[in-house]
Length: 301
Image 1 (cartoon, one colour):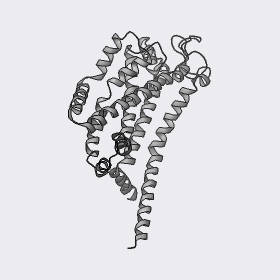
Image 2 (cartoon, helix red, strand yellow):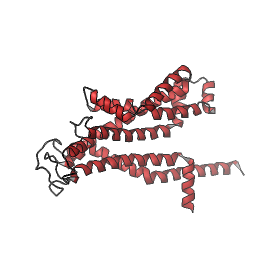
Image 3 (cartoon, helix red, strand yellow):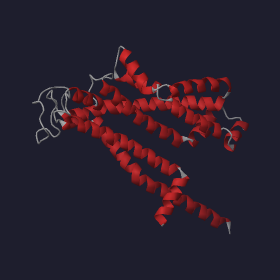
Image 4 (cartoon, one colour):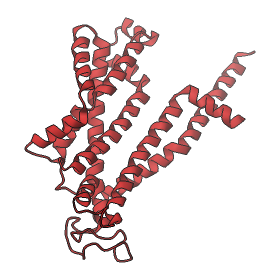
C-alpha cells in the first residue's frame, strides 16, 4: 500500500468521524441549543415580549387563561405570562453565573492539586473531601437563613462555594492521568513554563470534561435556587420561577385549582434543565468513541 493511499484512507476516516460527530450534534445538541437559546432570547428581550412591571397587581385576580391573558392571572392580579418571561432573567442569571463560578473553582482546585502534588495536593484534597461529605442543600438553607442580604449575588456565591467539590475531584484524577502522558513529559523536557503546559497541553485534552461539568453545575444551580426560593429562604422578593412556585404554594393554588399559576414555571424549569441535559448527553456521545461505535453499529444493522 502506497503512502498516498494511506493518507487518503486516514483523511477519509477523519472525515467520516467528523460526519458522525456532526450527525450526533444534529440530534440532541441542536434541540438543546435551540431551547437554551430561546430562553436566553426571552430573558434578554423580556421588556419587549412582556412590557410592564411583573409584580404590578393591575388585573383581576384568579383569571383563567384566555385571549386577554394567555396564562391567566395570580391571586394578586399579576399576569402569569409576564412573570414567567421576567422570571427567566433571575433563574438563568443564577444558573449561568453560579455554574460558571463553580466550574472555575473546580478547574483551579483540580488542576492545581493534580499538577503540584505534595503538601498542596494534600491540603486541597482535604478541603475537597470536607465539601464532598457536607450536605449542600441543608448548608445552603442554613446560610441563606442567617445571611443579612438575600440578593442574587449572595445566592450565586453561596451555591458556587458549596458545589465545586465533585467536579474538582473528577478533574484532579484526569490531571493525574494526563501529567504522565508523552506530550506533557515532552513539554516539560523542552522547558515550557507551567502555564503553557496547563493551557496548551492539559486543559485542551480535558475540555469535554470541563464543559460537561459546567452543564452539570448549571443544572444543579437552577434546581438549587428554585428549591431555596420555593422554601422561602431565597430571594423571594424578586420575580423568578422559584418565587412563583413559592407564592403559588403559599396561596393555595393547587387546592383552589389555579393550575396556571404553578404549571408554567414548572414547565419552564423542566425545559431549560432538560435542554442542558440534552447538551450533556450529546457531548458524551461526541467525545466517547465507544458510544460512537455503538451508534454506528446499531444504525448499520
